[in-house]
Image (cartoon, rainbow, N blue to C red; front, top):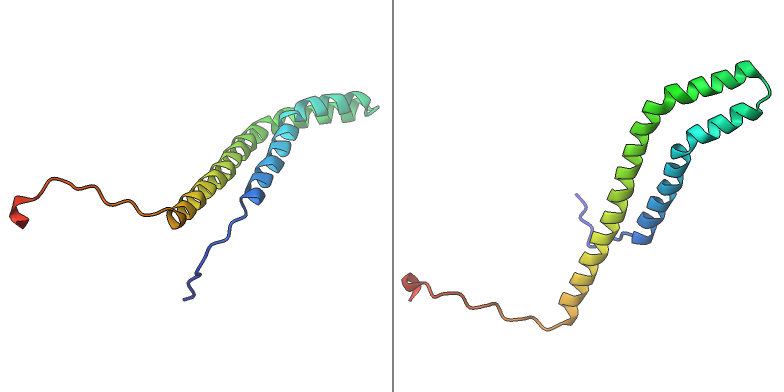
Length: 111
């Protein structure tokens, strides 16, 4: 078993991935509008009807995917934030003097 002596996570990459998902989210959100526009210019009534029909039937699956995309965006952004916070806290603990532990009430049985 190999144990790594460090973990390297590029939080900028996590945030960039979340931004890319935002673009995908936007495309999925606007898919109905895109299908309507395309069906108007396709030049064939039968094909236009098929495009509209597909768009309507695809809506439930698109909404499910949007929910998952939004959840993944949040996971990526929250993960990057937490990693950065942990990194700052660990750096701080290495550079600042340790504080003495607070003294609690004395335990009479230990005297």
